[in-house]
Image (cartoon, rainbow, N blue to C red; front, side, top):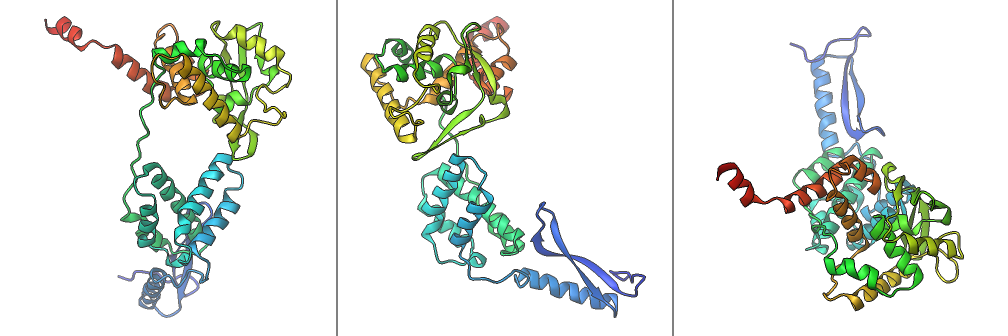
Length: 364
């Protein structure tokens, strides 16, 4: 039986994948014709597939994988968030650059292994390297600069990088007490009270203005974020759409925050002495001052304390109030998904469970 049927125009036609992809991710195909026979078309199709596998349909060039990666970052990640662009730049310049002479079309598993070895022992970095290389290669295939067959081979045998972040923890009792005992600069104290009492992300707290507070309702409105990269700063949207929210200000921190906000000489609450926005460097200095202040009044060593731990503590403390408050409402307050809150609640519930009492009640 013939594999291909003769068309009305007398030709045999096959629509064959040429090893590249369209902009929407679908396979790009090429029509191959024969006026002789189905067998002749089969031979042409087989020859074309061999050419695709041999990468003869890929545009030749002398561009290196490093140069193409840089160009990819500049063109296709131009609209990405500042910290995201900084991550790609760090991966490209700090890791992909160790093999600067390999051509894009010659990039193979051995080169990936060399780059991964450069980041040995750093699972998170290796995960970011793999993600970056995959995106670069995928775009190169779309640009017909790299064979789709080679791309499949490149990643088919490469192991998945498994990175597990450190287990999140809430504040210790000693750290909670230190929050209200520490002697801090006014701005440092205001920032600390916001992340402790309102569970704000670092970039959300730093983006606050006077008009974001409603003292009659004892609330603060979160509508934007302040991101930092080196000496550059940028005001942007919240991390997710859920991040836009209104958060109650608890009585434990409200009096000080109200006094600070009303007396702040800038409309923006957090500014450097010269009035410029807080940079990564100035924030790190502020956080070190806060840690020193907390340690000075803490009976126990304070280790590994980050702003995100305060946010996790906020979520944990709210989960302890279930069912007085629902998981859905907690998610709304922290500007996250219910799935994230459920993970925290699962730990809270597990900590409270008494296995011995449950066994005795069921079987004793």
